[in-house]
Length: 167
Image (tube, helix red, strand yellow):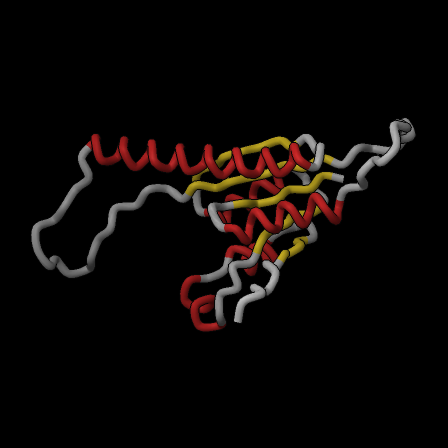
């Protein structure tokens, strides 16, 4: 079974990865190897970096600002460092469970890229976390998990974060 887990910087997405590892993979407690005919499950962890977009307004309010090459390089470096940190955390979670994972960092619109990657990789299951946006925020901002459910050609599992214990 090919499983793809989409992650971002949120704790909810890393929780979804942990949940998938805990619930979708059989952990071998004995030293007996699995039967030859059994195909090992494979997990791919994908992080999508949104493209850098210059802020703009429809009506000029003051002087127009353009990003210099130095600013663009700085933003790109910060994105790369953020992606490396996210993937490091994800890899550590997989290693703790003794599960090898393939990792990928892709640039683009997360909603569309996740669905495209799942289709190109021919995954059997796509796992995404849920940030728990309310109905109004979801209507205006959209939801990656909602988009995946409606556009992916494979089953999609949305893992909601546990309710906080503090009230």
